[in-house]
Length: 131
Image (spheres, rainbow, N blue to C red):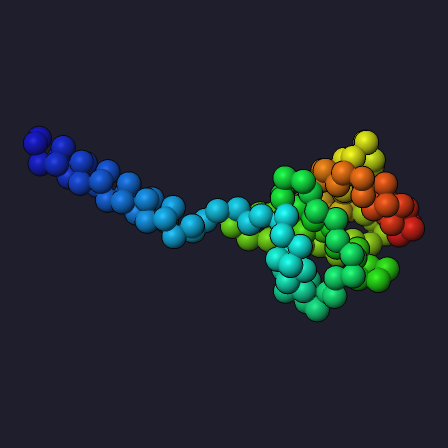
């Protein structure tokens, strides 16, 4: 019986040590989309050559909208990664003050609400031009 407690204690110490190491190495944290250079680089990487000419970043860093000329894309922090979708005619946006809620038009993607501050109206106007 004592050996089982010793094994349990050792396992618990090992788990806590690995969790501490991951935290120290900053592994597994959600990416922060408030850094404009990071957003541009991620958009070009995730969206395959998307050249960002304009960007709108959520105040909390959870998501961003990027434009490449007439094209618009949505980037979202998804776990420790960035997910991105180029938005087309099926995409919709609703405006509520400084908050823009974007629906990609894809069934498996939930609507995303971004706090875009004073830029919300300009991005909403861009969405209206898509349709």
